[in-house]
Length: 91
Image (cartoon, rainbow, N blue to C red; front, side, top):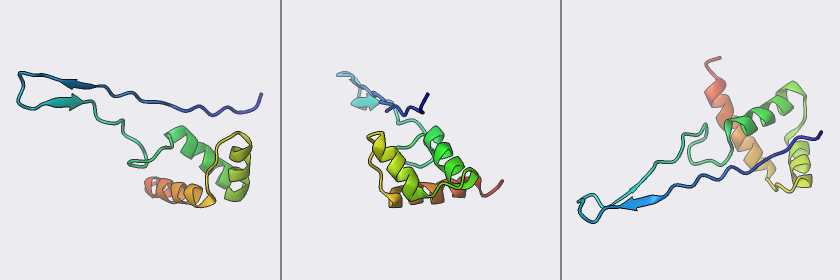
């Protein structure tokens, strides 16, 4: 069975109180390994294991993802690897 990638959609409703002074309230975004980034920790782990564990270059990973309908630049993958390695540096 081939691997499947899914889009995780986070719905953050806004609530307003007419009697409150603070106005509109909204739940904060979930914490991510890359602040403001789209990838989850699982996708980052997949990219890192494929690159360093399996020796699969980023341009091949980009081609594999493109065949699955996910168009990512190699530069985006490279940025993800660099930012992920920052988190792994203490190890």
